[in-house]
Image (cartoon, rainbow, N blue to C red; front, side, top):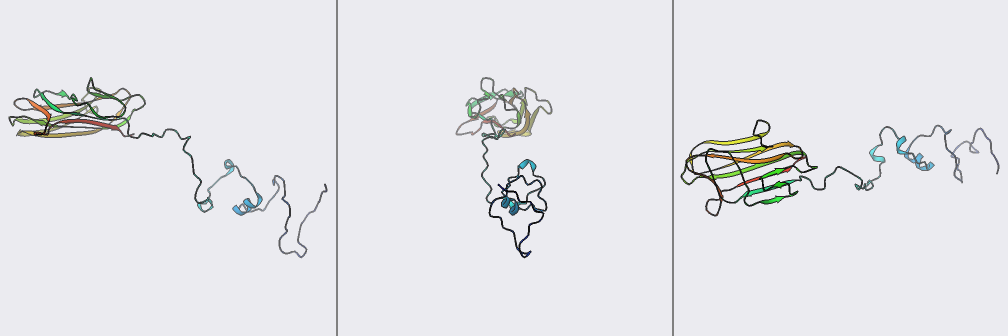
Length: 230
């Protein structure tokens, strides 16, 4: 092994480049005047830790196409968006006393119930564990009276049994002047916690009984649905 000590290296005629036939090994801490270009870094074979990078990297310097990124370690991303969701319907003939609010009971059961969160025994949707958030809720009825005396139809979506302002939502169709049938829908958004429950209430007034029914002749009925938005 020998040691070469010089102050300056130059070509024989002072022009051109100095070519090294073997790599130069060392930490490079004393090197100066090297422009930090991509070509320079590649030529020196230097790996720069990402933690030491500052500023921005021009998009043109990134590989094209970019390497594939695995999402295997990502968390908090739902693979089943808009769950839970439910849809219950009323089929058959149901008669209600006029002038009284009634909670709808869903004789036909679930059309969809993603998380089995609808309490069929008590006709209400209950927010299951892990699914607090903002929900869209909707209900609809088609009311009927055989004696053409229907004069009011109302729907109310209740949260935890309350119809107070901010807790429930009501829509009414009034001054019907003796209608035979009237359809009404209601929709709302609600921020719900685990264990909160939602119910749909119906009100109809007029002489005689007020009915909700679905058959080939009258095509009346009711539904209640909802799903988590976020």
